[in-house]
Length: 264
Image 1 (spheres, rainbow, N blue to C red):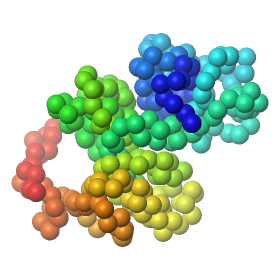
Image 2: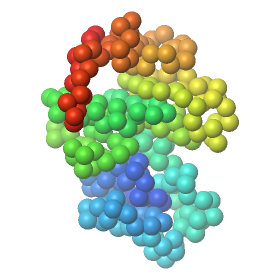
Image 3: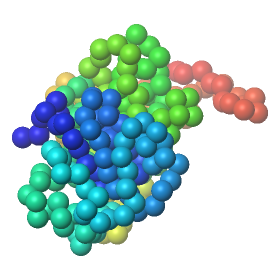
């Protein structure tokens, strides 16, 4: 069993990815030694290096530190990657990013935002509202927030709440067991993974069944899912459908931002 607080040195293969870098930053904040590989330099890898995280761009095993406790990979890393082969041969524990995110968020009360589009915006807005409130939250975002210039938010006071983007790619979101979940859209996407739209919908269906008993599901109206998890409280939302539990009214645009009244 992986214990987050027992990890002293963690190594990421694909550390420059938006999801991987957020977790790398989390472990740096926890006080662990963090290092990793990525194929090419980027603004994000440059920022990680400024934060004291070691990043290499050569897959040579000679660059990999020798005192690693845990290796994290993404589906983008090929099985014949020299660094991955070396780490496997050493017998080190290796987990997918999604697995590790599930372990981290399992230690708190999680709000997971899923959907084939809209999840990055929605999760960032959710995190911002909580972060600025007395509730607080830690958040793993699927993009760099302009407000914070980061994809990781850490509350300045103790809080059980975590916000994360729940990615349907590679069925990653099925590693999550949130207390609150939002589904913004279930349009046909990632059919190279799922094969059919129905298989994608089945995966979202499974995701709703993993919401904790007594939890909440916030669902965009018209989403073609049959909610069979009867322990949930379900709220629907829309832009202007007055039959949903909440919708927007009196929508205006001043040239830079939208204004509206939230009707609940």
